[in-house]
Length: 200
Image (tube, rainbow, N blue to C red; front, top):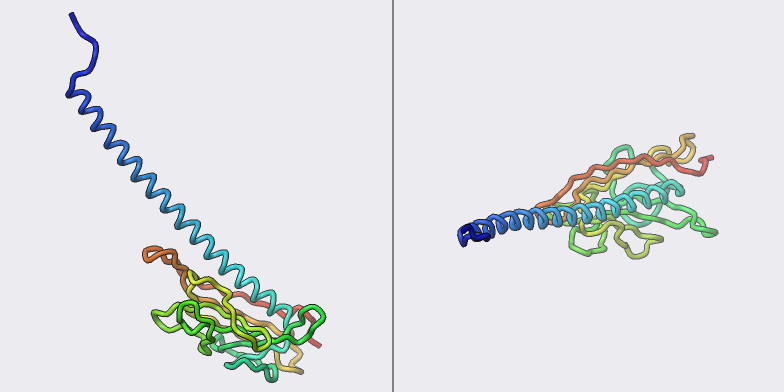
């Protein structure tokens, strides 16, 4: 008479196969979860970079009296013929108060530092962020620490008075977005901004 059921060997083989399938499935789930976290972090960092670039472009567009050169004091407007000028400054009208001075620069490379580096480039192995100052006040960071900006450069044309050219600013940002030691994405962003107000 034949008895229904499984032998011990059949049970051991089925449990072993089930364990192998579960380990493979669990490994895939962990890898997928890690990839999703990296993608979300990269998306957050690139959104921060896009917001910083948009903020700079909007402020420059509404500005005037563009001045390029190191230092936080706005002197006479002057052009920058190349993309290698540090600490650009300009004025803009904020509500009813005209002629606020805005200055952009790179940080000195120390993590969390709000000290301005007058160079257009960040030293090798340093973590630099874009800083912004208003009316000569303290600098505040525009980009997060996941965004390492190696180059911040401006080119200005038409800023000089009497040149009959509508002022135009070209802004260049180069660097990397770091999610972890293994995930680093390079970026190189360039945008052109024309002064909104008609230059008379």
